[in-house]
Picture (cartoon, rainbow, N blue to C red):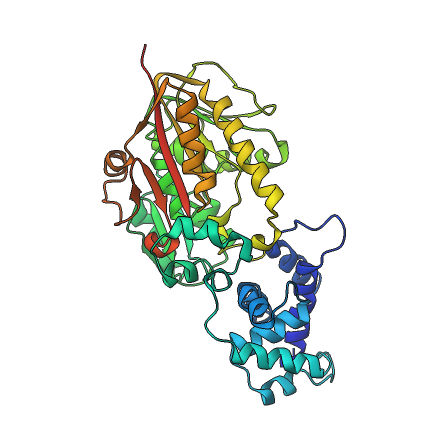
Length: 433
């Protein structure tokens, strides 16, 4: 592909993400990218990396571009122009060469588009929300989460997230997995917060790695690994994973329990839960049972030593991986999520045995989805009390939490502090008999 052809391909993908056809409005950007390249087998690996690199760069630059241009929206072409001049520093000459209308290259820039390029180049330091690549209406929510973190906290939300794996201790050790990755030519290192994490420092086709196919390794952010570890599930326990989704945390719990005990993984969506059976077989996790439940179902009353509620949320802690997602969150949806979180937590709490623990987790950075939900639950449920996560962390992870991660009784993982996705964890205990 020519340089101009690469830009045109990126524009087409961006248009499909920013202005999708009816019924495809919530299709994740990575699925759009994969679908585009899959249908065009003629695109070689080098061209594919260049095209997708521009797409992701543009999506992460969206907040800055909209602010600099004084816009509420942009087309794929406009966003590509803004990213090329703003993030990549392309000169007028470079832009004219890429946008010359020859072959498969995009048409020459219009006067309005040249003005857009100039506005992006001349823009001053953006406000925090723009640097963080999110809508302005979420600025107050983010400020409440970051407090005095300064620009580093906000900027981290728009940076590329690391690729992290979890070692499946049912089948392998971390040293064994690191050796296998090294033999495959993959640069990888042990993570520092938990005992089972591996961070990749070079790109890899994970699905083709023997260590992945054999169930030694699972893709899982280190923050998610920590959240699962803080459940403090041990051999012989009965554990409920109330919003299990694809079951990543259920598999981590099975390993922590050494395949002894029982895990009931539930979800209201059969499609989300469907991959768990296959994943559990590959991982050798024999104690996981899947169940489809109705919304508000308590599953079994007072029957589980540990109940994990990985609640549906804005996903703001993982927006580095889904840079299109902040712009798809509407205020009404945000409010509806908070109502659902309270309802889910109340329903799941009925399943906790006296003396057992309820662990509330979100991949959100926003206090309205985190602290506020748990504090309201504790006010309404006198039979539960908070458990200090500062004591649980070293007991299950054998490390000290980074400064700023323990906030009172809660764990608050933020990208600029822990180098993980954003996660919130609250542990509460039901009064004994």
